[in-house]
Length: 261
Picture 1 (cartoon, rainbow, N blue to C red):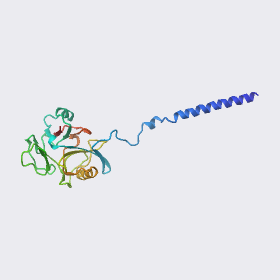
Picture 2: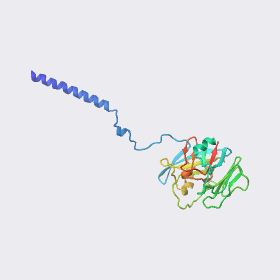
Picture 3: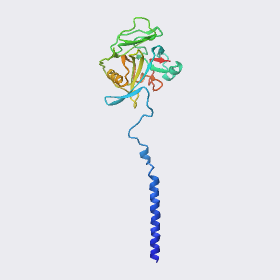
Picture 4: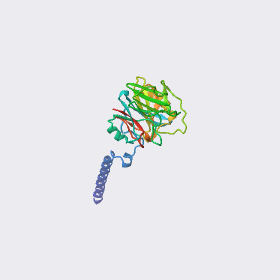
């Protein structure tokens, strides 16, 4: 009789243990280990950018962001004396869109033609790299290989030219390096479009300059935005591209900037 009572006791204890283990496993079934929950194998963007696409350039994901503006709303300013940061400029000038202008020298002077509000700040120079001019007068905008032959409201020399008469140009660039690129272009409906080419993971880096015409060609096909003429502006750490959707700040001061109010 004692052995029977003993077996019943053992059986009861076994049932209790099995019931407890099953319930523990059920509670833990919906809880992931901490190491698995905090690790993501593929990084995903936190926000889908408007007016922005990503294409592969030599197997490297490259983002293209752009903004289309009315030429009459565009103003051009020098920043060589003030050397203000883009955040200050945006507030002080009430810029809705802020994009850097052309190149400047180590002596802190504009490289080539620079006209602000009909006043010639710097004269044009002969350069195989800075071989283009962008100018705006009223609602007329032009990107060409020659400087304007009449008074214009704003004008800038930069380069190289990337597109001419809706065709990409063949570039031969010495000592080409990957860097963030800023481009100004004219669309088929005579609007001014600014474009930024950069990497999400390293925003001061981007494509080779010599590849820009081909990249713009791919941009046209993906967006159905037709580019007529295009010119390269300053890039890398001395570039700025700020719109309602994108904020790319400078690493060093920009020499000039386009302000869209």
